[in-house]
Amino acid sequence: MNKKILIVYTGGTIGMKSSERGYVPITGFEHLIRERLDHSHHALLPHFDLIELSPLIDSANLSTNHWASMVEPIIKLQNNYDGFIVLHGTDTMAYSASALSFMLQGLNKPVIFTGSQIPLSELRNDALDNLITSMLLAIEEVINEVCVYFSGRLLRGNRSSKVKATGLDAFDSPNFPWLGQIGLNIELHANLFLPESNETFKVPNFTDGAVSIVPIYPGINGDIITAINSDKKCKAIILRSYGVGNLPDQNSSLIQALTKASDSGTVLVNISQCLQADIRQGQYACSAVLNDIGVISGAEMTLEAAFSKLHFLTATEASNATIKHKFPIALSGEINR
Ligand code: ASP
Image (spheres, rainbow, N blue to C red):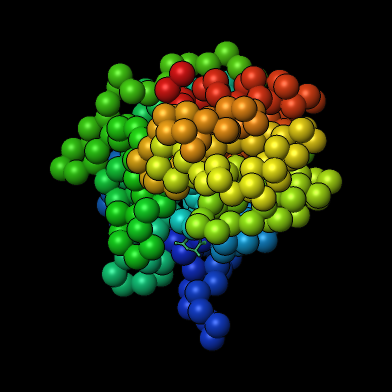
């Protein structure tokens, strides 16, 4: 096979080994991959090069500036490869896949995020299959977008969420069909893939803390919103509401704090705590107040996509009116409109 792919190794369980303090990512993973891939099958796989980011991280340590270091080699070497794999920890993979889907609009090549629940270094693992299948997916010409491949499922990256902490089928896209199923055969649903895009790449300077997430819970006090909003870096707050977008409208401390935050120019976005959801502000009287305050519906967007999109928009757009205008419109297939 004369196709070529680039693997960007960021860390995560797939490349970890156990230490006295638990699993840690280790350098030199390329050697282990080459050792594990059966030599007799090399001819069926694309040629690959591997770039190891430094430092490697457990993805629980992800901060927003890691996104630029993942995307830079892909942009720099875009013409040298047919496709790309990002090896990433599962804990925050859906955040990074979402962020890269916004940054890499216009790449028009497959970018497949994968990882594993058990390290490749262990006898029994899910790493080898996730890796080999991702290598085959990374040369599929029908894929023009950032995906997550995990345990037989090919998912749109910005529709994916980690749904299981220990099950090998750790990822799903609860509000969007799988882009492909990989069992006996590789079955791709060609009608679901994004078309080629004419957009150009944007690699903005992200700021940790520009976007916060606040879950709604019984008895919540508005002070939590006030405290977050008093941080100068805060540009947007995601409210994780109940069901179709509900919250306690009789909780005056909360409503007053939200009103003040919105009046001060902070973008407020409504995302459900339910994995399978579509926000309908005003379906119940208790959520009608959100329309008055100017909270924007996140519709069926995942929390991870909404978070990364708000980071992307607050880093690329100057005015909060533009951010509010652009947020509900699909950039890269993350929402149905
Ligand atoms: N804590 C690990 C990480 O996200 C978990 C994993 O990779 O499965 O890096």
